[in-house]
Length: 334
Ligand code: ADP
Image (cartoon, rainbow, N blue to C red; front, top):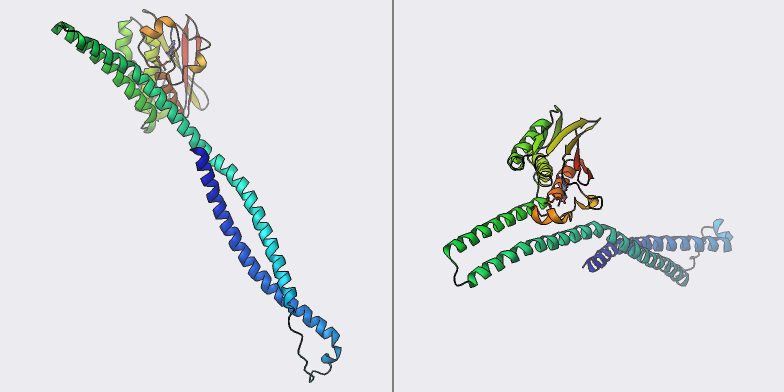
């Protein structure tokens, strides 16, 4: 698809350049032809005057100058034509090569975007297919059961509802990865952190995990809703991947033009080999015990990364297995 688009774009470039070039050549030819004819006449007249020097002294003798040498004129015109055709052919070849190269450069970002979108669609449909297949087979098995009691049917519906809930979370997350609405304003960092903590506190309580929020008085420029969501994602992970009874600490550190927010947990940690990938879409570290038992689709950190990037910030992680992780978000302060 992109190859034919590249050829088409090259053809358009070439068409425009050749149109201008040929138009220019015609104009040049017209001017040059008139000029050649004029200088040929002048030259012939000069020779004629040299051959008849007496004419200058006796102007009463009128002798007609010889007619223009048409053969010479046509030869000159043909020479100009040949030079212009040669120039046009050279422009055609050079513009063709340059056009093909430029068309490739123009289309490259579009091609990368389409490839990325295709990868996204493939990943998303793959992720959606697994729970949908499970849901379908669960319903089919129960429908085939002739002795299905009302109690069994209710249990099935509960399980289905749970699955549907998970699918809804997945589809919402997928939608979020493609659509963000930002409204930038100056915000109190402590307020955003408090808001995020409020949202995850029930989960933390369920695991007897304590959260120590920052007391920073710093301000950041950003979108309230998405920044809150960013810290919810990191805190939610910190809770999910920590054993019961641990604690999570949030600290802030101001630098010249930015603020660093560290979220430190005492959880299972991230393996060195997984660290470069955890911000990728759908990536879940294969810590065999947690992957199957901890809910998630591997989308949280990719959403977090996107939010941080939209705020011209950075997100990174330092982690040690079985000791804990520190996620650091760097946000510009002005
Ligand atoms: P998930 O839905 O799996 O939590 P995320 O994108 O939020 O997806 O995280 C990607 C992976 O990074 C997780 O599956 C997990 O393996 C790892 N991870 C993220 N946060 C933590 C953390 N605080 N401690 C340990 N591992 C983490």
